[in-house]
Amino acid sequence: MLERVIKILQNYVDGISIEENSTLEADLGLSSFDVVEIVVEFEDEFGIEISDRDIGKFVCVKDIVDYLETHI
Image (cartoon, rainbow, N blue to C red):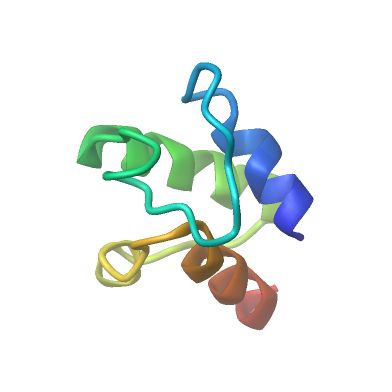
């Protein structure tokens, strides 16, 4: 799951190493708009719907992985 999440995130960052504990904003430089676009990709990739409330809980890559693992 981590590898699939990182693969999607790599489309939004250039040359930044993505680790499980990388924070979306501080480490990867993603804006809230970027995160919304990424969530749409996760929804398409994994066939789920992620609520706006849950998106706000995504601080680091691990948060996304944990969420997907419990909702797929």
